Length: 156
Image 1 (cartoon, rainbow, N blue to C red):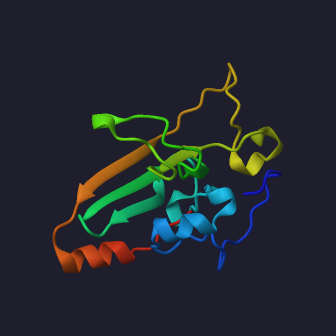
Image 2: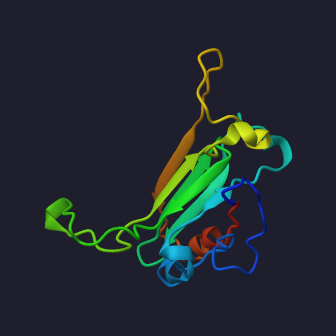
């Protein structure tokens, strides 16, 4: 998504995450080493914003850990931790250095009152909003099935 609410193909660009990629090699290629705002693709029966659809999958092949994200939100923002500089201390005294984490934030489009196809992101007293984002963490230990899961296409 552009700041003006325009959408465009990510095909062949550094921010194309429709297929499984290594984040460590992809992040330096992103604009300002940071993520982007992605339109969550809705197809078939799940074209409305009422049912969560798959938005992203993160996979750690070494451990078999997988994170699946599904949402009713129209968009998903990827943050890469580009602003971390090692000055913050986390669990067990670990320092949070540049790109020490990643965040997948499902949201509406800022200023979407001008972009009606993305839904209205302004909370209004007479129009309640309900959105749902599901984060499913699991570990897969069966190598063949794990490869199949890694190959599953994800939509952004």
